[in-house]
Image 1 (tube, rainbow, N blue to C red):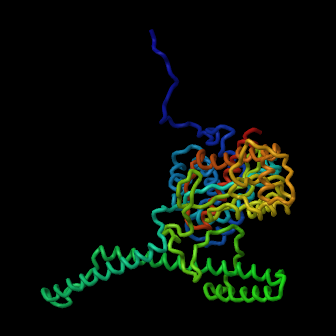
Image 2 (image 1 turned 60 degrees about the vertical axis):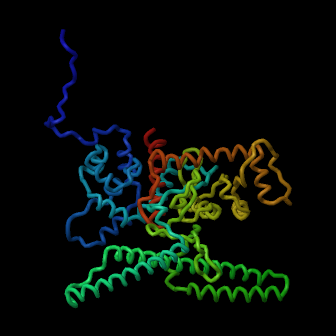
Image 3 (image 1 turned 90 degrees about the vertical axis):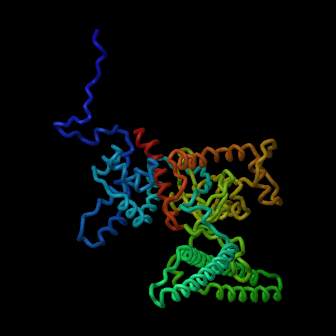
Length: 489
């Protein structure tokens, strides 16, 4: 009886006629989509920057190939430049995309770093592509944030109080080591003669001096940041007193407010003198963490600074754990879960993010959302009033919601804005609308963190991390466009 036969297998068999590489991938593969959508993206900023360089030297990789490589890798959950470079050899789809070219991981990292702003601007282009495909609906937009770890350890952060203690301790230890070294020098001079050998600092002294220098630098930077924070606070108080000079009921109160405003501006200018160079870059509308300070502008004892990524802050994530990270925000449209606005900063509380994020929604799409939902972290009377002025139907939780009581949704005008919002969410219509929030925005963070495995930023510094988050959101939208529109066509 003959045994079972099998198909021929010869992995080392050469081809008589070379095969087409694109035939090795199925028609609906992600790489085909990335190459097609690449023609819709404006990459002139990257191309102009490269053309402005010296034309001599070795030819560089095509910028469109490098952009396609990054977009495809981010869509596939590959973020490390080393892993991306390895995929150009080991992954068939990536090898096809690059045309069998293999940029070194340092070249990939440098390209991403040098053109980070241009790459992050692709986010708006992806929103517009999704809108053209009918995937963006502004009937209901949900806003939420998530804490993402920075490229730094929370154990590398140190409080101002501990910095001062460590500085004093290291100074004393260095002084003792130097005295001991001088005593050894004198002893050796007596034994071997003066000037026989140059004295080398012992390793323990070098380590302490290096650590002392780092602590002093971080301490000085924290003190400078605290002065800026206190000066900004004083200028805000001065602006408030300026309003009182116009609205106060009596002349005495208006004069007192004017005096306070003048004094506060003088104190602010002493702490942080105005600089004409600061006008070159407009201030960001996003909130930023401010160092907690004493009235004289010195940091409070528990004010912290991280040695690895000074812009990052210790925050509490959704599971109640302390992480060294950033607060990443997203506004997501219902239906296809497209991110229509993204933002990131180092302030942990959410209320001040709502208005800038919703303003970006209008800037990216050309229209305002009709209804928005947000959890209790975004509640403030100011946010509720702003949404009402803009004609946006806001559903913002005011605290832990009780589901066993209902109202008609109509509240007397005399009630506080918090109570009116709470009554609105307890109504059947408000409750049904707010329930859709969980199915709109929270899955997006799950897709980014779990499905694509992004739980820690690769870059450091607020500006770079903000651009990295925009690039991540852009590839999220590309995946939505690929799965809901392009692949189904």
